[in-house]
Image (cartoon, rainbow, N blue to C red; front, top):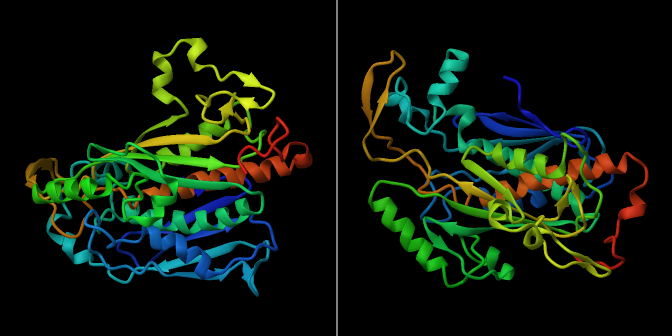
Length: 366
């Protein structure tokens, strides 16, 4: 199975299945000399791990990370960094009854049709649990970005139709939904209780903002920065749409409205989402993703089995009522990976000092 490696210089390969022994990541290309330890990575994983809110599966996983290589005496060595997270609460037997059925909304059927077999233990590689390895790798990317003053934050804009009306980013990590609006947290919780009682699930919208990104990142034509951000976010299983800057709203604007006019002090607006012609312009990079409802629901649905016979299915077991909030740190991690890779690609050109500051001469994002 190809397609398990992401990035060109800062390269990440993930491995493992939902109900297998472990998940993990191997990171190649991380520069030496960065301070790094398990506690730093664990902080990011704790934001993604299950069981913290009503929206999440009751599966009890500590998601404790172990650094196997690439770090010596608290510093990265420049060698591959291997990270492993052991599964402690796997229950593959819970899927025995439905192992020959294709769950609607899952990759069961497509994996089977492609490979002729599939890991039916919770979806195996296609499970959302695979994203734990991404978050671990994203923490290493975060450590690199910190050296250059680049920060990535992600938060919930909407959950099951409940929308944040204001953005207090200082509040994001003070609530279990990563919502920037203190007035909407209780409403989101009520919505989750409602859909759980119905045996159903909901989706939502996550916004990701990168601050302090210097102008000049991105590789035209096919490796545009926004193209790689979109690919990174779309590679997350529950994501079904990505927009950058004004996104789909730009289709309803006039050119005079959508253009970000320039002044000696900077751009007047940021409809471009911090990227022009595939290259960062020094402004905040802003992306949003549409997250589909979790497909594992207890309502009865129609399906077929591996012999193409019609069947009925109810998916029991331990499942999230929404991919939000646990997908929020995953989105954050994927944008970090993109920026870390493009940062090192730009450094390899040998003229990083020319554009480390905001091009208008002030530290706009500081």
